[in-house]
Image 1 (cartoon, helix red, strand yellow):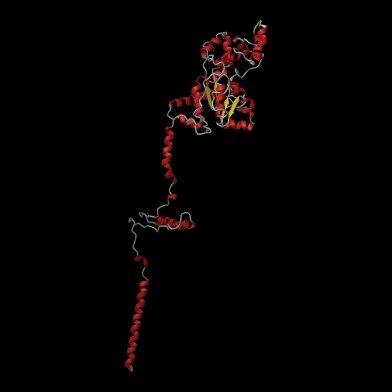
Image 2: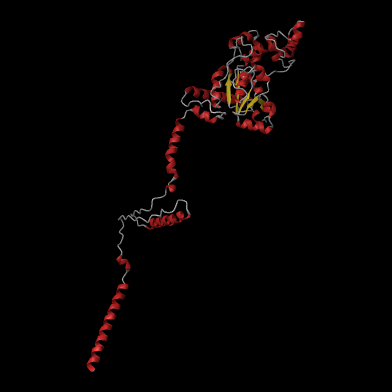
Length: 428
C-alpha cells in the first residue's frame, strides 16, 4: 500500500517536470527577436523587387480600372522613397497615357522649327498677307517658296510700303489721327467672297481690275466679254461707303486692301487723250466749254458751243489754276486724295508699269481661281497706242519749263509717295 502510493507520487512529479520544461522552452522561443530571422539588406546590393501588376481584367475607363491601378502606383512611390541608396526598384511600367508629353512632341517641334528656318521670305509673306480661300476647288497655288521671282516681288512690296509710309510720316503727320469718313472710302470697291478692297485710280488699269473683281465675286465667268459700260455704270460692284460705319471699319480691318498707281504725268496725258481727243458727251460740254471760254483767246463760236478741240496746254492751264472754272475730276486728281493712303493702311501697292507681275502676284496671294489672269486688252480706242513715256514727253514738250515745274509740284506727293523719278532733268 505504502509502495504503490510512493510510485504514484514519483510519476506525478516527473510529469510536472516535463510540462514545466516544455512551457519554459515555448516561452524562450517566443521571446527571441523576430528580426534575426530575416536576411539583412546590405547597401550596394541590387534587389529586383517587382511589385504585383494591376489586374487587366477590368475594361479601360471602367470604375474598377481606376481603383485597381491607383493603389499600385501609390505603393510604388512609397517603396521608392524608402529604398536605401543603391537599390533599383522595378515598379510597374507606366501606362502610355502617363508618358511625358514634351518628350513626344519635342522631335516634331524640332522638325517644324527647321522647316520655318528654311522658309524664304516669299512664303512668309504669303502667310502674313490675308490668303482668303475662293469658292470652288480650282484655286491658284500660293507662291512657290523656292521661286526667287516671288521673293523679289515680296521685297518690292515691302519697299513700296516703306517709301509710302515715310512720305506720309513726313508730310501727312496728322492723317493717322483722323477718323475715316465715307468720303475717304468712296473710291474703294468691295469684293466680299475673297475679302478684297480695291481703291480705283482711273487710268491705272481700273477698268480691267473691275472686270477681275466681278469674276471673283461670281458676277461673270470671264473678263473677256464685260463691256466698258457694264463695268463702270452697271452698279454690280459695291463701294465701301455704301455700308454703315461698323461695316466700313470691319472691312478695313479684315480685308486685303490694294491699289494700283501710275506715273503721274503719264496718267495725266492718258486722261487728256481719252477725254478730249475723242468725242465725249460729258467731258466736252462740261469741261471743254469752260476751259475754252477761260483760256483760249478769240475762241470760235463752234468751239464754245461744243467744247471740242481743247489743246493740252489749255488743259494744263485749267489744271494749275487755283481759281479753275470747273472742279477737279477723278481721272486727273491726286492718288493721295482719291485713296487716302496716309489714312488707310494698304496691304498691296501695285504699279501700272509692272502690271502683269504685280497683278498675278496679288491674285496668287488671295488664292484666286487658277484660270483667272489679269486681262491685257484695251477696251476704249483699241486701235490707238497706249500712252507711254515717249508719248508723254511729246505732250509735255508743248509746255514751257515753268509750266512743267508747276505740274510737277502739283503731283509732287504722288511722285514722292510712290517713288517715281523726276520725268525731266530740269525739274527741281
